[in-house]
Amino acid sequence: MIALFVVLGIIVLIALWGVGVYNGFIKQHEMVDNAMAQIAAQVESRWDALSNLMQATKNYQSHEAETLTQIVKARSGIDRHSSVQDVVKDDYAFQKALRSIDVVVEQYPDLKASQVYQTTMDSVNQYENNVRQSRMIFNDTVTRFNRMIKVFPQSIIAGMTGFQAEEYFKASPEKTEMPQW
Image (cartoon, rainbow, N blue to C red; front, side):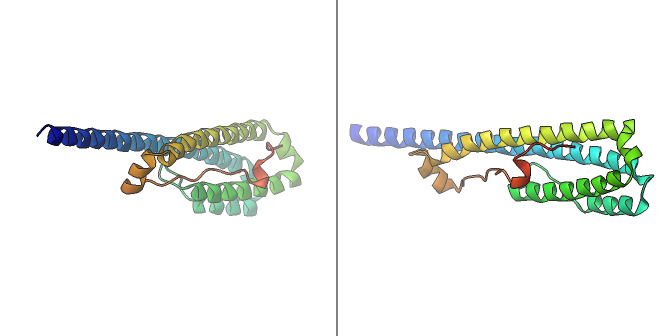
């Protein structure tokens, strides 16, 4: 009889430990989602700043302005459930739009010298830096989550409940250097 209570006690303790580990996974995964949401907020602000920059260039070349408007409309919305690949695709679209603006600016030096352009470009740069910082925070959060699910004996609970390692942001050749506007 005592042996039965000991076995039941051990089973209850293991079950409680498993529930605690599972809840820890849930909490940490929410932190990963939150970190992606922070990236989404910065990306959205960056696009808003780029839209303002587009308004400044519209007066100079309507064809480029139309192209930029189409790029902005075609971009994918990033949210807390987006993947790293979604953000990378959005970054490529952003860089394409920025290069299109650069083409216009090179053709019109007085645009580059305007205060509106300068101020708006400073905003774009600031949001670009904010996106970089948000990515670093995301990668740190993913590291903590991935470590949690890979460490034994928690890896057993992770495997049984379907938790898998999250993907990191990797430095692309274009992102290894700070932008020089």
